[in-house]
Length: 260
Image 1: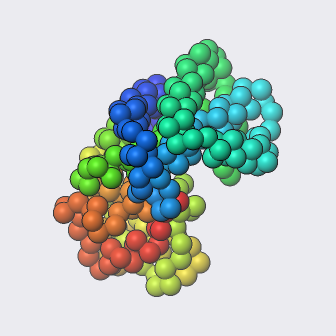
Image 2: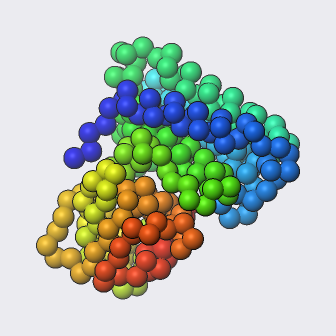
Image 3: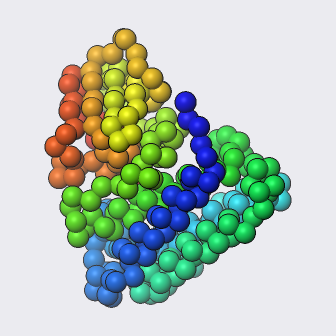
């Protein structure tokens, strides 16, 4: 069962902010202009994306506080355009500031505000802890997109992974693409230990907690590798040797989860 602690998510988000600073702050102009793991994005552009996301998530926090609607898509485009117009070094500096500002914004809320906060967004009514976990996931994955270019063995941090892995059943609906062949795959992870059933059908992809006896294949891997698989970041060069797949090809799963 996915039980989510607001304090745990906020603490992990603070540590993810520290990792973002460590990844971005030392980089020079040439390094910022280098490729990131994201297709067609430089490291500075990844920073820009995280900076704009800080503003967008800040707007969602305000909407949940006021009881108002989710900001319109047009406002997101204006934010993206403004960030895209920044110089690469300014994108990096401002991304760090914006991410810190988002955390400060949330930390300033009262316990009553955090407990009462609700917003219907991304297809369901969310608590503030759930929204912050989405923010954590985006920042953790995109920080990895930067760090892995200098360290091919980089993995997602354990604290973020422990929170993100329980949100994967929700994410698979957005991230997965039909594979053509049907499969029922028993998925087991370590660090932390989890059990899922991954279903591939002609009409969609589904991940559900818990084992199932009617499986046709098996996948065993670290939890952070499962997160990266779903987010399209488990290519052969970045797949831990401990990953085991029986009855299904890893390349088939990579084709289902192509990244976003």
